[in-house]
Length: 621
Ligand code: MSP
View 1: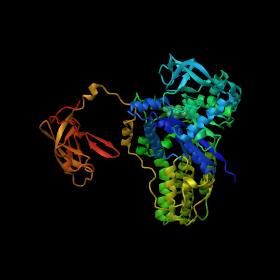
View 2: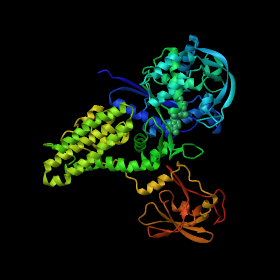
View 3: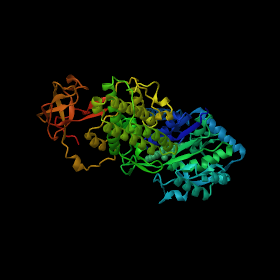
View 4: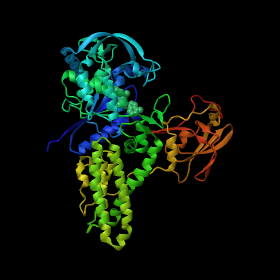
């Protein structure tokens, strides 16, 4: 059978900072689609990468004290790669625009359009926004500022090379009119009206300030970063996969992708991309994400706290693709508890533990199936193609919601069938229930594979099935693929439910919009420096130590979770920061009269001490 090719891309990201949840969102959507196409047997190439030749890179490197720009770019590239690893992203390619293969593509491409006569030199005066890396028009401004970056653009007057984009107006208009090219349709209308307004020739060079790809015919200039960046889609995929089947882009970069990019391709005779999926922006708890608000959400922090699968689940399930959406850690926790743990995890665990304990770990032979059994099997058969249709129609969220609905029906089926009763009264009936339930578990593993790549693999392993769930065919989800007598592995819980305490911790997490406090609020804390006089282990506790601390001549007993991080000898004599006016609490039958301050990260716990010795009782302010 002929495999169809599926070439999918994310935008390439600027390296002036590390990824936030908005970048992760784009990449996760692409990952779900790529994984699904692989299960469909397509020859998939999923490309992501970094846009490094920007003035933002130069600025960021300077701010961070790097003199060697390439070193800075290399460091950031490591960071980005790590994030995609943590998020379990299955990209096939990773392109950096400072790589030679990319530079060569850009130079060849520039030369080609230059030789064709589609480039001319001209004087340009305009307003350049470094945030957008683009000249702005009157309509991009609000009160004289860039509507996206809220900054007054720089007036620049320079000699530039121009690309004759206007020449391709007619062809581009025809292209974007095609209803299958830009989704959702609201974004197509937006593009259409922009193109109808008239495409102007575009400046595609900037003066060479030492960073960027030199213009082949005139190295005193560098290629404009957008012209350079768009070509990653060619340079990053070995030429084998062009044209892109799907470019996923955020709404802010739609215009470059749907006007300049097709213009460049038309000029050189490349085929045009088949489709663009344009998504909206994520806000955080209803607010725009920004450094100044301190609410930029780090996807690594979230994944380490809740698992990458849980983050993916929330983003795909709750953000309507194509529209703006809101990220809320509180809702993420609710989804994890109510859906991943209570519905999905619970179903899988109860089915597998039942088989493990009551059927010797072997899938039972079903005997005759009754109406309820057949209904559930039919539901599996109809859910899988319907989820597939949703994904194909670029609505993966609807697919995911259907899968959860199926798991919910599975729980109801299990409850209604009462196998714990039938095992005593009608063992054949019980065998049928567990046979059908086991098929459901297997089918769920396959259907969840694009969405929850690691949980689905764990289900596969628990079922003791050969190979990886990611090597299966999507269509095989509807087959009763577990033979009677098949021995399953030892069941393990899939998702831990978080105690309600985590909900408040979630709210206070480091990446949430800060709850600003006044000096008055802060002064409510009586934080003092004290000296540790003694540190004893507490019987029956692996984690706690009983500390005796001298603060202003008074001895305080504080119970602290330091036993796994410090020995008594290391602690005694140290000057530490203590919150004195904490309400006392009983811990392991010891009254703890204060709180020791410490910092925590993945490496462990580090207590706060002072830089220079101070008098015991010195106030921290
Ligand atoms: N380097 C360009 C893209 C060049 S592609 C040839 C760029 N980079 S970016 O890092 O600023 O943005 C990359 C993507 O992240 C864009 O699709 C953008 O829409 C997306 N997001 C940035 N912030 C976002 C949110 N708050 N929410 C959702 N996506 C957002 O633009």
